[in-house]
Length: 157
Image (cartoon, rainbow, N blue to C red; front, side):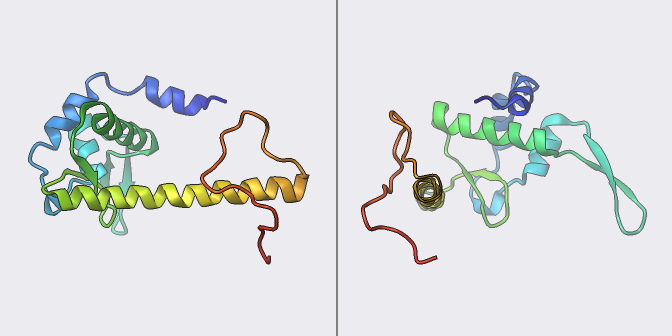
């Protein structure tokens, strides 16, 4: 299954986004220097994607929308995955920075692992629901989740 919206967002991604993000984050080393995605988008795209009006009627430019957010997140992921860049996420404040220590990398890895664990629990719940509601197990050849249904396993709900 393909997602046409995602394909469209990827197709509109600036060709030099990886190099530009590396350049933008050059001095964003350590959590105290985290750059928000809005700041990265402003530096990256230069032109606002829209304008907002505050409670006093003043308009201000907006540089980050869902498409640009996805482009930035994908490019950062690709920089880490394919180019071994030590860019980490600041989950407390949002945004990215180059890790200033191994502790920052370890904290980011722990956060990512926690997300993987939560997704595996959701997969396990859906696999149990498939059997419980539709009396059908996973299709043959489907990849099992980390947690597999065991005889007698279930929920009290």
